[in-house]
Image (cartoon, rainbow, N blue to C red; front, side):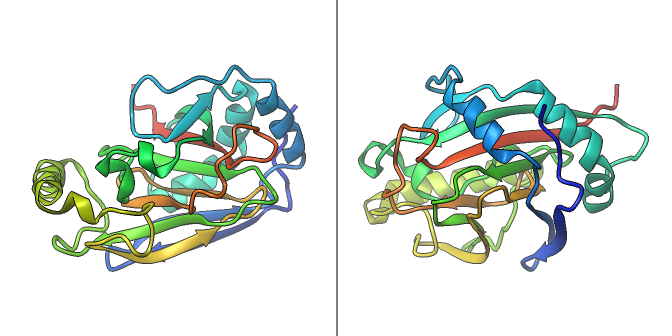
Length: 232
C-alpha cells in the first residue's frame, strides 16, 4: 500500500509574469522506495503517441487513488477546482531513454502537455541520484508562458515557421540555453519530490543526456499524472 506522508512539506508558488500556480511537495510518500520497486517490475513499452523521449509503464491505481484522496484539498485551492467535484486521473511511469540525435525539433524545445484549462500535471521524482529537474519557460517572441486553446494554433504556426528557418540551431537538449526561450523558474530533481502545475504551461525536463539509463533503479524515473475535475 502506498501512503502519502502526513509530514510532507507543501509549498505554493506563482511563476512568471502570468503568475501560473505551482505546488511543490517534498517527501510525498511514506514509502517511495516501494513505488520504485513496483516500477522495476512494470511492463515497460514505447509510448504510442506524444513526444516523451523514452519508455513508459502503468503505475499502481492505488497510488493515484491515494493522491486523489489526500491532495485534493490542496489542488482545489491552488488551481481553483470546485471542491465538490471528484478528480479524474491518468498516469504513467516515465524513464528517459532516448539520446539527442533521436529527438525531433519539438523535443528540443520546452513543451506543453495539454491545452485544457482545467487539467494539471504532476511529476513525482523517483531517483535519489539524479540531477536536473523541471524548468518553466517563456517563449520570447510571443511572450507566452502558457499555451491555452485560444493560443495554440498561433503558437504552433509560429514555432513551425521558426523550425523551417532555424531548426539547425537546436543543437542541444531543451533547457536554459534553448534559442527563443527564457527559463523563468526551475525546481531541482530531489527524490520523493512532486510538482503540480497547469498542463498548458511551457516546461521541460532539465537533463544533459548523462542520465539516460534503461534501469528504473538508476535512470531518470518519474511518475507522471494528469488531473482534471469530473464535471459529469
